[in-house]
Length: 228
Picture 1 (cartoon, rainbow, N blue to C red):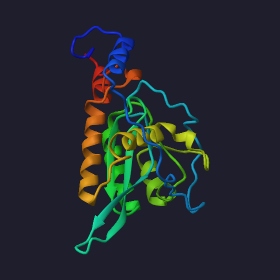
Picture 2 (cartoon, rainbow, N blue to C red):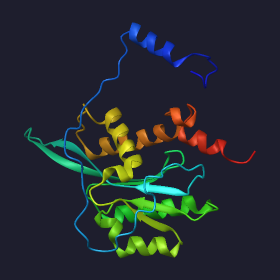
Picture 3 (cartoon, rainbow, N blue to C red):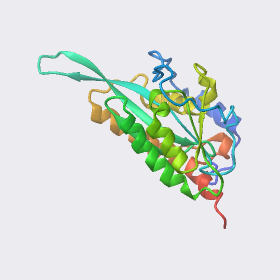
Picture 4 (cartoon, rainbow, N blue to C red):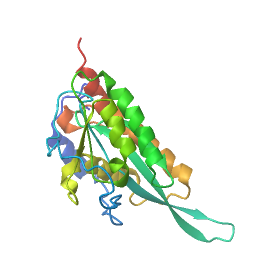
């Protein structure tokens, strides 16, 4: 409303919503969190971020993780089978923008590496040394992943084992996505779920406003930081 020129207090909006019985439907987590940790099989990078998530420099601090989604398929006999989809996004800690992502039917290093290449290219305009943060998942320990970062002089950072708070920025994004388009909704094909996630990421980046960004979207915030 402020972006449209309305001068209104947040508490007044809350009162109006209560009067009109407008409430957000909340869903709890339906299953355990997906974990790609398979033990120490490669490089374990130090935790360089150490929960210092804030930065005013776009494309300097990037984080990533993998999340799992379920969908269902019904055959001609009416039998229902459950399948899974995996999302690998790269998020800019400066404004919360998803700068690249991969979607696949199986957790794969290939999917992560393709999203990584896009993230490296997009963040190449950063005037400072970049940090790419993750957990200790299988793909992030692989030599291909760590070597690619070293080649670009990007510092690799990892959360401590079993400590999701070390990557809470990414966890918060997954929580929002699942709360707003996944929990309480049943998807009956891979393509439907994939399309819903792609649409949400576009909406999240370009339209979904954030209080910490001054009630503008991640893309609007990034553009506001560009020199006049």
